[in-house]
Image (cartoon, rainbow, N blue to C red):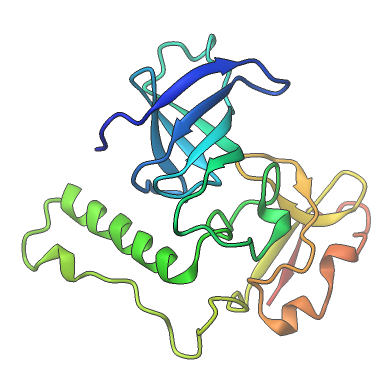
Length: 205
């Protein structure tokens, strides 16, 4: 799927082994494909062409026979041309899931999403039309790519705190301003609420 990217020796760190990898093409789920010592690593929080340090989610010794590992970028050593200041700080390292490309320029997000769709169609054997014509276009009134979520489910933590679950985690994390939600949803400021005992989720519609 991608040629081997440069990799450097790893070093231990609390919470998981840290690798230095270079991100390649996109994968489903908002990650990018890198390789370390011949093994595929799906990395969140990076962009094509970037070199980053990334923390593995899995224990590499326990997952020694796994076909791939998952990791989250910690530090950007060489930024790619698509990186911009994130629109949602709370979606960064150890943050909420669902905004894996918050640090990527919007035109690049659409280009990358198009590549993901094209690859899925190619793998499905679609030949009835030129796959390259499949392009992700902005929706009407979607100039900045923000404020479009009109239905949002918030998770509730053990102490009643309202937030969202972390990426590949059951832990509830703060949401901050939540710029992807519609203005009417943001105005509720649900991330500042404390839910009553027994509440498992809060839905904003």
